[in-house]
Image (cartoon, rainbow, N blue to C red; front, side, top):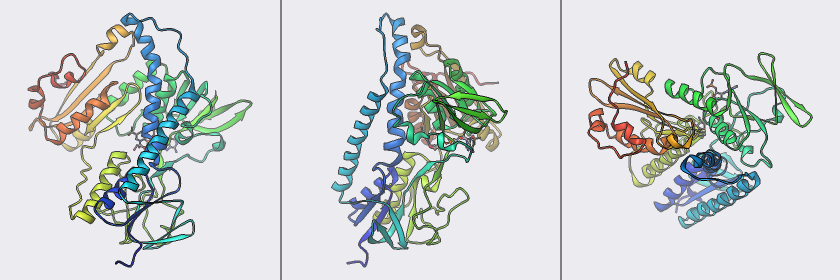
Length: 450
Ligand code: NDP
């Protein structure tokens, strides 16, 4: 018998923590997981899952409109926000039960409450102390809101999932993932939507053509995008708010949402006291084995601010526990991680942007096409798709694939496999297309962009 209560104590039952706990327990070791807020973490409660449900909800208006072109007469449609929230909450409750069962069935002890690190092997939760050989911190992140006068009036994505009523007008600060996803959702639900972004383009880090194309399509749909500006202050005025911009102008609105990034949840539970090193953005510093500078304390997922995506945290949890308890080497490959942005039209992307590729290689070819998807020939919906491929001329290897279009997230998942397998343009060209689809455009790209 070891000297510890547990072999592994996980703090935070989000995507990464739950997977690590379950896998570890499956390897036969004694595992506990502590959670103070909601099981499933950001993804299940205030992130990926409810967001995608909202995305579906927001697409119906266009679909009702589009139906007419196909001969349908659709009656007057109305939307009920409280009903969406109630149904969404019910689904999240179901997922809580699923997560709980999965953990319990794997033999993990679930401890509800806020964990505090007492020493390098001891955690206290609500006055009870637990010792563990290893402690894994998987506490995720939290919305960051800059300090501005009137900050108390704003909401973040956390609150958006539980609003009592939908506003008529909203201003969204930020130009990243969450800003563009929520702008699309709210616009789709009939909210007059304005994005207020400090930069000159949306989605920093994405391929430039994708950034331009998305802004164009979102604007065409009716979303108001203000670039190169920032909110200086927010005032409460009667039953609405006034956002004062840096140029002195004011915009009246019913709600202001901030989507200006997320910061790691790394403070206030004892890491500082134990000397665990954080970086300048408060992310826990870890080595390639996810180990902090304190040997018994490990961290993964958003709290380490590497690649803040659920599937990455899950992969990290699996890799780490496989290393500890099944003697396997760490196997997370951070190259070619595909990602999607569920704005409308959606974005899917994997590999290098054109700019990144040109910086790294001297012989880059670009293939690009934009087109009206077949559905929109009759739907009357004025939305186009963009496909872009980046490859190395000398080897013919494809190193980046980017797409804007409603099916992009589904299509790019498959592209990511091809890229990881080292696919060349010749392999794409010799692949028979599936007709008629949007995806077939990827195997019929013939003209190099000059
Ligand atoms: P992002 O980092 O994607 O975007 C933050 C945005 O806020 C940027 O446009 C940034 O501008 C702007 N910003 C940052 N600080 C300030 C400030 N002080 N004042 C004004 N603007 C500011 O963060 P999000 O909050 O959108 O999302 C957080 C992370 O969550 C994402 O990076 C992603 O990893 C993950 N996520 C993934 C999703 C998915 O997979 N579909 C969906 C949602 C989130 P600038 O560009 O100039 O820095």
